[in-house]
Image 1: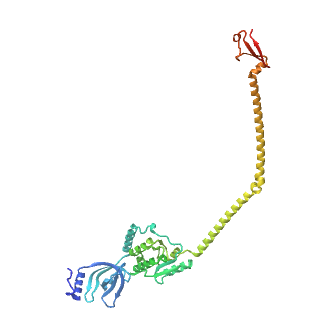
Image 2 (image 1 turned 90 degrees about the horizontal axis):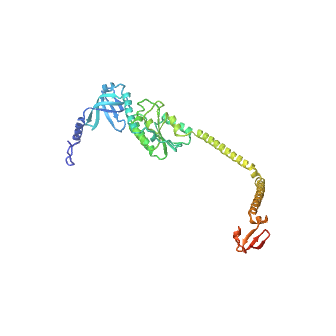
Image 3 (image 1 turned 180 degrees about the vertical axis):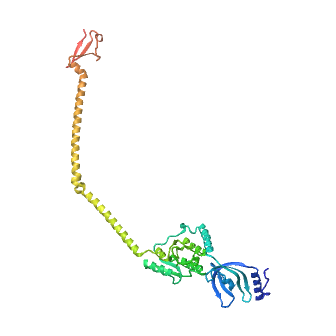
Length: 402
């Protein structure tokens, strides 16, 4: 039941603390997982104090355990170890603090960690965080490279030195963070957010040297992986060495096998680019020279043709000869056709003359006509006394039928 209080009827601190202790004691024994952030063994003391920190959230819990419980851990308990603790929550009334009285502490084995990573890997793959279609290409020449790495680490040195050796003008914005331990995830996520908000940063490199599977666990943490997937800036993962494959390698836009390889991927080599420019310039020069030579040869070939070398000889004279030849051919054709037409006319005239009545008269025949012009074809056509007209070759004669 809720405690009923008012401003006029408050309860003493001891009462509130006692009730809180009673509520906490009702929780019973629980199993809690976390990472040992601090371990305190006092000489001669039978109780060991340790701080258990949540791997993701900024939450910690004080744990008290008998020395025998701590000494029974295999492997020996150390700061940074991932453990599960079985204990009973306890509220210390005198100081108002919450702690966990441990009765058993177990180290989380490597097999358990790998199994959890496989389950997380399957979940993220199902969500599409590993798909190649969502990965962004790196810029050819970034203005500023964001680098997330450990302070004074070999990874930082490898990236900076190799990148500047390839492109001396490259600019870096370095964010030094914890790259292992209980604070690694939080610090790396915060550094990513700062770099992603900076409009001058064109690419982000997350770099760390090699290490054990436990050391590289922060780079397989779900919170960190989702933060990388949400970045608008392309992210390069350069964690560990070639055999190391944290889940960050699968979520990042580009995976580099080592920090040195990351430096080679984010900036081009100025010597190689100058060499490529020289090769491209040479190819362009050869192509232009070859094209000009071909066009010059084509112009020379055109100029060498007679029609262009001497237009009078090439154009006028051949046409003059052709016109003369055509005129002569036309004259011959016309004369021939005229001759044929004359012959045809003579033949036609002879046929006409052969069929004409005048030709018949010329051979001694005559045409007898009556006075009305009708031709007399027989004696019955002209009665006695009928005047007739006789047409001869040389003229006409008059006659009377007797």
